[in-house]
Amino acid sequence: MLRQKNVLTDLTDEGNEIDDLVAGLDAAGWEKATPAEGWTIAHQIAHLTMVFALAEKAAADAPAFEAHVAGLGPSFDAAVQRGLLPYLADGPDKLLERWRSQRAATERALSALEPGHIVPWLVRPIPAAVLAAAGMMETFAHGQDVADALGVRRTYTDRVFHIAQFVVTTWEFGYQSRELAPPETGFGFRLTAPSGEVWELGAADAPERVEGPAADLCLLATRRRHRADLALTATGPEADRWLDLAQAYRGPAGPGRRPGQFAAPA
Image 1 (cartoon, rainbow, N blue to C red):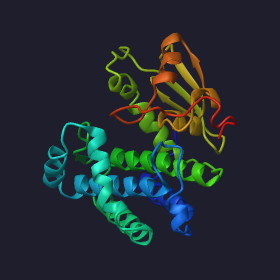
Image 2: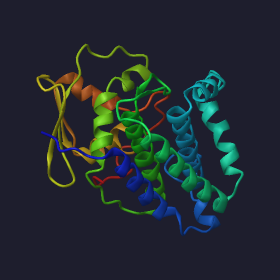
Image 3: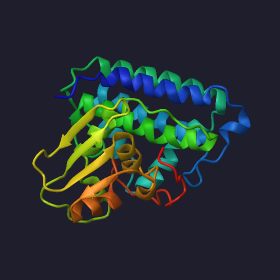
């Protein structure tokens, strides 16, 4: 049985790790290009601040969240780029201050809810604990871009449990974002935590399975590493196909990372 893990505490710790990466940067550091084409470190932190602001609305004021989302327009990419502008205009010092204050406000809003309380979100309503896990996924993904831009090799912890569980829950997203029909049943996942603990997730009796390091699954599904640079294996043709499609978010998949771009498993 999996031991219980506090997603809100881990969300705070994940954010603190990324904060440590950017806190001492000068203006040139904030303008450093990241592996996401066209995005600097400032873009990454602006995006996280924007997403956390949305999560605070979802947790604290559902009608305001729904009104905001209704006004985003039909283009997901355009809405993201437009949403970044007010944060990028602030400059590094103000952006860092807003990132910190927004994280704290979002964590307060989530902590005021029971884990199972249903809140609105971008794809469908979800429990508050799952929204916190989605925040973990975003922080992990964009934090990885920051670390890669700075040449920092991250040391992963068992906090990735929440992200791995979120990936398993949203396994269909990669198909849906490409307008492909997913298989009728999902996959089983046997994942090794950074601590060495083994996590069995997904469909326990599924004939098709994915195995390997939990952190690698998180890197794959956030599209921060190509499968060729990770130690994940698939049993079954559809599970193997899924390793090419996996993503833990809706919307365009984007180009992802090239094979060999990060040749050693992270």
